[in-house]
Structures are given as C-alpha cells and as structure tokens.
Length: 254
Image (cartoon, rainbow, N blue to C red; front, side):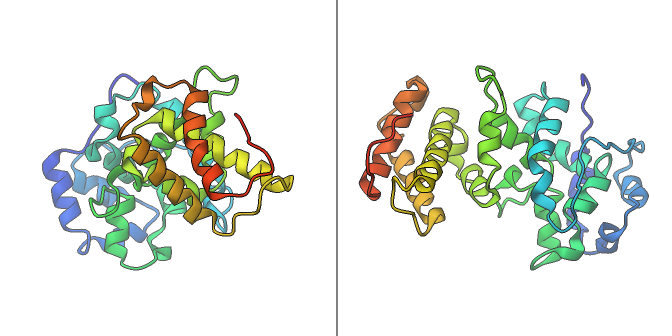
C-alpha cells in the first residue's frame, strides 16, 4: 500500500474523550455512526483477519499477525507506532474483526479503559503493544527473520504461548532489541525440549523464570551491545542464567 489513512488529530481526541458518551456504538456490529463521527469516507471492510473460534479467540493470532504484517510490510515505523493510523483501522476497515476478537461485552474490568487500550493507545497499558491490531503487526515485525527458511520461525515461537508473548513484547527494552529477543525465544524452546526429555528439572513457575531471564538479559544489556553479537553469542550469554537457576544434566548449546 502506498497511501495510508489516519484519523485527524482533532477527530481522534474528540472520539477518545467521548468514549463514555458513545459507549453503545462499540457494541454494534455496524460502525457507520463512528465513521460519521470521524468525518471520513467510509472504508471498505477488510477481511484479511479472521476469528475462527469465538471460544478461543487467540487461536488465530499467529496467522493473523503474519497476514497483517504482509499486508503492511512496507509500513514506516513512524506510522507503526502512531495511534492515528491504528485507531483509524480499528474503527473502520477492521471493525468486523475487532468486534469478534475484542468485543466490549467480554471486557474484563472497566469498559472505557478496555476500549482505550484495544481500539486506541492507552498510555497506561504499554501503548501500541496492546492495541487490537498494532500488537499483531509488532509481533511479526519484531520476530521476522529473512535469513531463516521460515522467516516467521521466531513469530511462531513467540505466539506459541500467548502469556509469554505478552510478557516479552511488553518489556520495552527487550522488544526493541531483536537479537536479545530471539535469544530468549530460542532458550524458551530449548527449555521445553529439555523438560520433555527429562534433561532438566521441570520449572514450576515458567512465567517467573522467564521474568528473571528477561531481567538478566536487560542487565547484560548495560554492558553488552546485543546488536553486535551473533545469534550463538547472544544465546550463550543468555543461557548462563539457565545454568545458574536450573539443574541441568548437560549444557545445551544452540
């Protein structure tokens, strides 16, 4: 796509400030009234993204991340982190997807905060990493690797566990460094493999273990420039945390 539409700043501010007034509009499968509020030409519905199981909505996050990234593969990073771009899409072309994936009827907690987070950018909640569309694009962008036979190899690793994926992408320093992020993803998959083969004591609280690993990697980042390391060098540095905090039968090189 050569031209990208965005919401005008004034329209975005007005729509965001009046979420409570317009709350009922977010429960409708039709978005004509919202499009009128945006004072924009009606965008054609876009069926790029799908939800095949309403009882397990995250099931399609991986294929949807790939589809959205390929659709906007040339998206400038300035727009990829611009609320006006993604908010335009959540309220127009991808309204149908948003209504299926992020219906406010199923919001946990405050509905207004839910809308701010998923349909806009909520500065209280990790900005663009929580928006219903931008999160998918960033999952793929941060993990895409053209040197792999499957360029979405790391994307698949990340989204194999939704909880861990959220933890990784919402750690700002880590999400900005693809070398460190890929090293952690390789370690996660290696730990799973070792656990299955009984070569390592099973980690009882995987989330807390990964939190510790991320913290360790961030600390290393203070003295090591990850970008100058090879994949194997980055892995070896990060693996030291595993050796220190688990009981291994043998070391596990990449």
